[in-house]
Image (cartoon, rainbow, N blue to C red; front, side, top):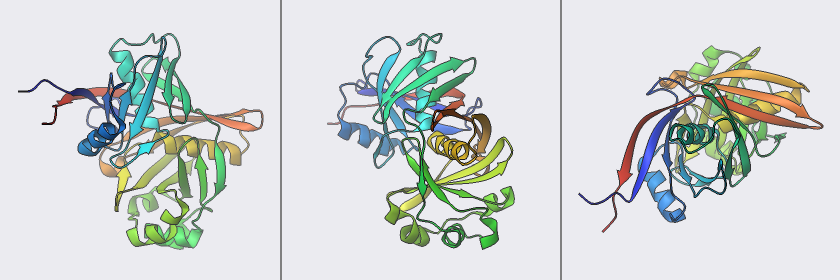
Length: 289
């Protein structure tokens, strides 16, 4: 058997239960790896995201790159949380001090709070118009127009999403997106990520759909979408400080819980995202001939 080329770890993120939450692969010591190999490994693993950790820059300071099966992302939430938990489990960081994960969007500061890792987004939330109106959103999702509870918006803390409010969890469970409608109404915006949510005070029920290659995939826990939503709600309601517990992945059999917080910093809204993770396995790729 050949010697391994690159080892990776498998984690389930935004859960404390193995085989729930959102799966993640993390490669440590990936500083010398070519981007083309990173993309190829991510495509082979076919998870929502795969993280490649570069050489330590300073104490508690690591660069990271995040890939889906088809592209590199500037920022993603469950890779940030999962990588932080893995580095802590491997004894590579001092958990009494902040950890800096340097993603393309900018430095993400992570703090460890018992079983939680909590990061602050590198940039404040930006909110703008969505290419989806209520009628188009209903047609896209296969719902009655009355199920759309408000005007969709677009929001981002480093990765943009169309945010669509629904009237109930029953409507949320019924959603079946139409790829043709997606191609017509979503893809032309350049933002191929849609986040559906139902508000119930400080509890939110959500689902995420993302275009990957020519099809649509559902994501069981999406920290970047949670940060965009928390930032939007904080901006909409002009909140000084509020926290939500977000349930996702229920309809996929992979229940997840994300904690998101919005707090006002002058005229800007800063967002924090927290969650648990558990290590579930590891593997290796062998050299190609």
